[in-house]
Length: 177
Image (cartoon, rainbow, N blue to C red; front, side):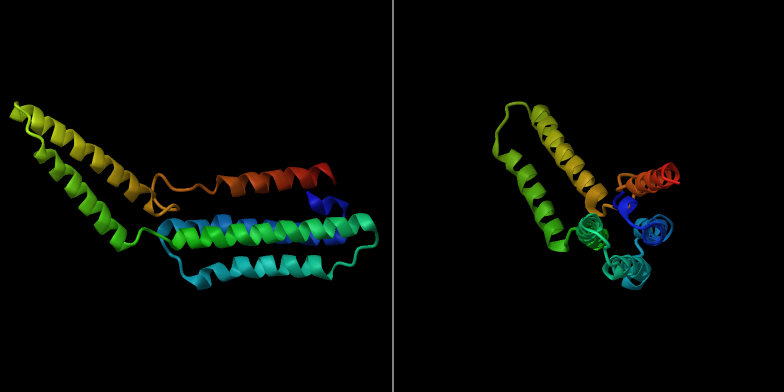
């Protein structure tokens, strides 16, 4: 949206970089994240496109105060985009460490074992209580496993936000031409 107040040639070039970036994220990076292919070399194309966008903004020489404000806002927005990209790429490669899994397993065993310290007069009731506690712990562990890799599986983070931005950009460009 901030490119609207810039000269047409600069605005067109910057929007082109953004469209290229969104296409790379949707068509290449997101499928790679979902498949667990997290090689750093595969992210380089997106970084290069953002660098071109950055250089396009930095090389632009504002003709008036309004364009200078737009340039500063574009640079701030780009820094936010850099931060969001870095966070996404880090999150795609992160998962729960083995030591945490050991702690979860030990905690679950201790919690279930703790139920045997209570003497219930009815053994069947004791088995039901212990079973329900174990089942609730199992459900939590299954949820942790499902959310361990945020970009994989049926509970993964969707690329829908990038599609929405692309549709928004396309409608914005058509409205102003």
